[in-house]
Image (cartoon, rainbow, N blue to C red; front, side, top):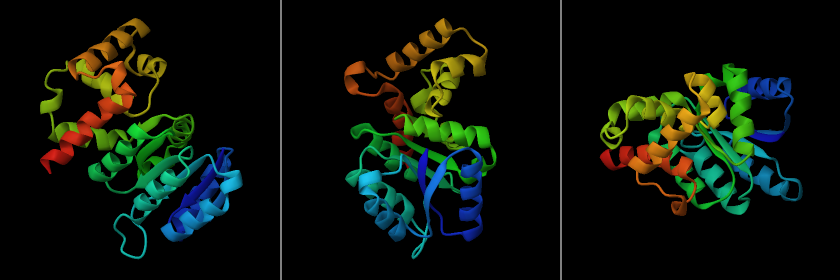
Length: 222
């Protein structure tokens, strides 16, 4: 997988480059700030990377430069997958990223930086977003669900478990393995989630919209 990364901390940038190489990916460029990230991707327009991995907070203000750069890149290059790495739970950041996924092609993901040490999970997230899927760190999901139960009150505990794994980018097969349930049971629970949250096929990507239900509610309460 061809990847461009953006991280202002040199140690993290070098470490991530090494880890990605060990996973068999090609790091085309490692940018040190958001401005460099944008210019590098634009320069690669005829041979775009498949995935961009970026921090959220970078110089000069250390607020949301990385996220803004990722969203700008998605505007210009909508097929490039975006995987955001952050040390913050950042529900508002994840919401902005996922909202863009609702209207544009290409995968997106939001992971906490401590996930970088879990190579299998990181690699799975990269392949998921590159294939057009959505990945949200389970800690971000757990935090939002814990603080904002009301939209989920109508779901059973098992349906909430299934929805949480869906929002992490798991396939039906992976959810079946994680929860030790049959594929038929997983498919039934997923249908129940969509029905109870009033998400129909005509609305678009139902997995993305189910995740956005949590994040949108969180933002409305903040």
